[in-house]
Image (cartoon, rainbow, N blue to C red; front, top):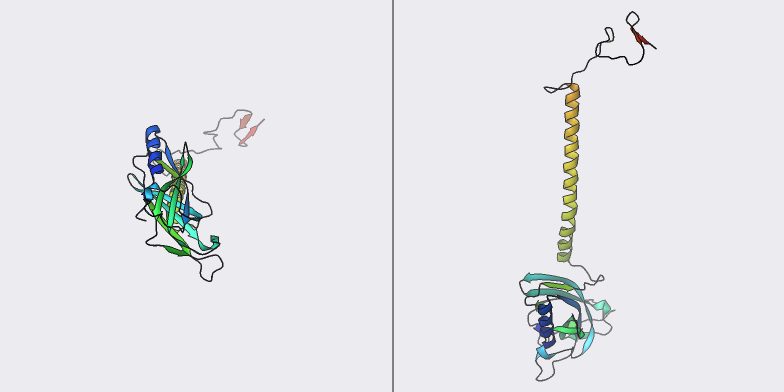
Length: 226
């Protein structure tokens, strides 16, 4: 969503993180139905004008250098009373002040109606908000385990997970192939099917290729006597 604004406290937090080479931790999101106070710039907001509920962080990505995109969800089954969404706040952890409003998103000119739980028609509101993170090297977010996973997240994480599994299977297949090659080579050597293979024959009549370690060979009867 375009129009997101880093707050004054957010810029101060960026300065601290850059100075210490720390991590920007996106800790949560909120949604409200309030209007900007007259004459108040969005950057000066340190709280929603009127908080309604928390939003769920679904995903965080890095589409470009110095930018992070945060995906949010609000599900109507979590809404006690229907409301008009007019503002969003992205929260971050400040080492000195605790949780602050890092980014404020004014939606007053393009509000969204949220239905309440129990309405005949449910609603899932999904917002993707782009944040400026300057030259911060590390950005992390608290992803809710209760969020509804979209197809794009499924494809993303399935690719990461399956690529590891596929690599393991390919490695196992290489081992099995090598073992099979060794077995085939051994068979060829024993059977004499390849040049230089092992040729082994016994002649019990003359006791050739046989060494008697214990006993006496009786040629007439062709047996070994203990």
